[in-house]
Length: 310
Ligand SMILES: O=C(O)C(=O)Cc1ccccc1
Image 1 (cartoon, helix red, strand yellow):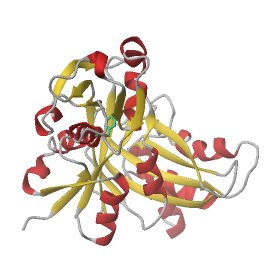
Image 2: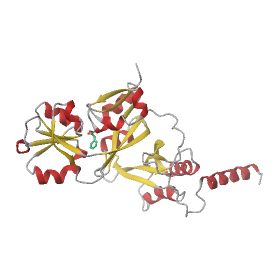
Image 3: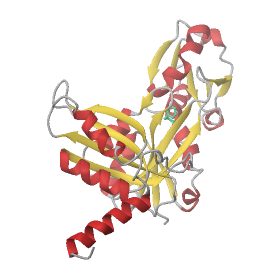
Image 4: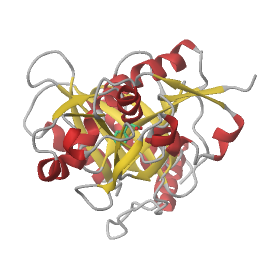
């Protein structure tokens, strides 16, 4: 039996569509799970080789179920990311008219992308959250709700029809998905990579966040996402989830992580992996002394000083 990838199911999620764009998915058994948590648990227990889950949405921001799972518990690592453009279809049982729709369902992250459409077209419909958009479609098939916002491709799978397609309040809405596995050596750098980390401050002091960000800034590393998540230890207690341009095997990133390790209470490395938007890592060239060559030359110089060979 081939190794398996767990994904946020059931069949017909955007997550499944995004997963199938990865060449390695073709050689794996793809197994749907009912939640992000259960898919990631399957990786932790060794039931699955990796799990594929949504992590960020260009309209709603972070998918908190995923972030919170990566922040806590047995460490996991991100190996790949996929960006998918998302538009929704309103799926109903055959014969249902728009005026029949009293309840609508979808994943909570879908709501901000369909809010204006709902207000204009179904102002009195009651919103019911589902574990995923395809799960909402399944619940419509079962008769629990009247309509689901999901991918048009999910209609056939659940015996539904699309009353409306191309629903999206924001143009070019995208969702980012990640392939998560147990910790192992990251793939070699491609020249356009991203490193994800979680940081816990040592203490609360003025400029504390600036100190953390300074470790990246002084080394000319561009940040792509910064999200704070509550640690659960009380109001005002947060950790920071950061995506930064570059790979841990690059000197500047390794030094930034070393700097953070020294000043933070804890640092969790979540992986270095190829960027889905394939832009070469943006090193701020105006900042002198931050090219990979300059980092390497400086490291060699210190070694020579330490050896008395200068
Ligand atoms: O993959 C799905 O279908 C999901 O339910 C997750 C999701 C939610 C909102 C936008 C894209 C994906």
